[in-house]
Every structure is written in C-alpha cells, then in structure tokens.
Image 1 (cartoon, helix red, strand yellow):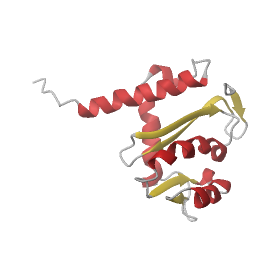
Image 2 (spheres, helix red, strand yellow; image 1 turned 90 degrees about the vertical axis):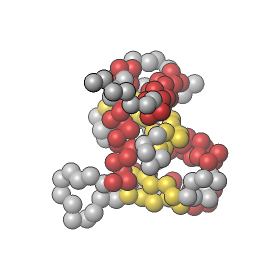
Image 3 (cartoon, one colour; image 1 turned 120 degrees about the horizontal axis):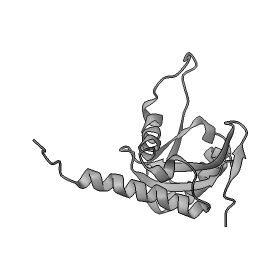
Length: 151
C-alpha cells in the first residue's frame, strides 16, 4: 500500500498529489495519486508505466518544467515518443496562459465540480484514484449526451 498522506514543503500543502496524462481535449489517458511529499518528476513514473500501453499512438508528450531532469533521460532511453518540456518565456512577468500546459490545468479545474475531489476525504490512495476516474467518466459521458433544448 502506498503512503497515503504527506507534506509538500515547497507548496506548503498536506495531503496528496494527482498526476495526470491527458490528450488534447483534456481527457485522461493516465492518472496516478501519490503522497504530497513525492516530487513531481518521481510521481510521473507511474504515468510512464501506464503510457507503455499507448506507445503506438503517442508521438509527443508535453510536460511542465517540474518534470525536467531524470524523466527526460528515462523517456529518451525507454519510450518511443518525444518529451517536450513547456517552459515559461524568460521575459514573462506574472501569470500568463501557456496553451499546452493549460489543457491539464483545465482538467484539474473540472475536478473541482466533484465534491469528493475538492478535499482529501479518502483514507486510501486507491479510492482517491478511483474518484478521479469516476469524475472523468462522468465528464466523458456528458460529451456523448446530445444537447437537449429546454425552450
């Protein structure tokens, strides 16, 4: 069993981190939940294990600058897809939207509509991961539902 709760000193957050791999629509193809004390680049190893089954379809994977370093080397040696790190421009001051990074951030924002994902209610990491998949399944089913006119 994975350690359930930790503390991320950098972000000053106690709890868990959700690591997501999403497509260009923001729909999940890989997810992992870890203790907050696990660094982002280490937490992404669970996503890489899940990406092995998709190597035929993945061509380019975009990642945040937190995933720089050992992950780049690991992907270069083990995977058939290209890893591109999305950095903010050197001249940027303050907040700015980065199109490739915004896709996964939008997915995290969708999760805030689901009560069980707003706070860490769950004791087990596997239950928290199941709630992530449950919320995404609900989201995808809403895409399939035809629009109804209420006029």
